[in-house]
Image (cartoon, rainbow, N blue to C red; front, side):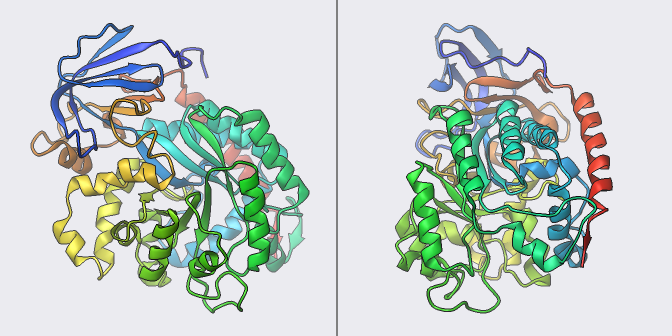
Length: 481
């Protein structure tokens, strides 16, 4: 990384002029030719013909200014092995993914995790994402976790570094272990070392509550765990002052006994009866949630993330159900979308946003939504509503005075970028990473004139390729029986 990337200056003012502004704010609406003033990390003003002094004036004539997009669920560390697996064939992918993960995480060094999170965070920004929930479930030690968190922070993206409790493999490259034992260690009960890592993350890296990137914790207790154990774990997380707890939710094949999460449905009713649901809880995937479960989440102020592109291969093959983002939204639960697995899916985020529309056709319960759908409705999952789904709606997701200056400026010069239709229609239908001219995260420019500031992609690609090959050689020496 070079010194070109500028740190946030609380007094710096940037005036973006003459843009077509897609605010995603229903009260304000769009501006066909407007100005926006950034002061420090905040949007200070938005309107027509702003007459304000500024340190920098950006002429955005003919361009579209929109909110930075929200990725509500991504395992950023998986960028270390992009292409190592693909989802084109879901039958072999389903059993292969967890085994790939269990081999890979014990073959990575802390330096590999720093690189993966740095590259993954930069890729997200490059594609127009300014806020990400990094569900960090691939770090096997305190050193690995601290390095990963530093890599994501150094990328300059906002959102949450969500440390997964309970990752505890005992094996290493060259070992032979039963698959059942490795699976049990993939996410086990948290130990003193996991809690010490969480405390160190909080005290050393995430002690500033105003920083764009904050600490979240992903609980290990899930379906199959006694509710008393979940209560103890969640109480301890909340006692640390953690404000956000994402959790993978999948309906068990068979109901668990009373007193265990997963006794009813996907476990949401069990959590609600135990008094555990709250506004800090985000259910991830959760395709099989019922209307009653969604109602309980709404009453508790909980949130949901649907990784729409990642889910679609399993709708029919594994009968997991279609992505549930529209059902959740209809039920009053803030719903966002996310990449999920960058090892096997593109980081081109506009493709994932479009999948939030196409996947509606996979669910017979959505004909009315599809018939009445609009481009703004779909973009909402990645902007305004997406920000609410990660408990950051008060800070980001729309372009309005007082919000954090998370912005994406799109060039429309490419011949394939349609010029007719509303701003939302043009963005949803045509935009891609190649059109992202500029990105500001909390008022700091991270990309300008189509180039990431201070980033040498060639050097990073070479480092990533070398690490990928080395890790693959080590991972191949692990035998599961």
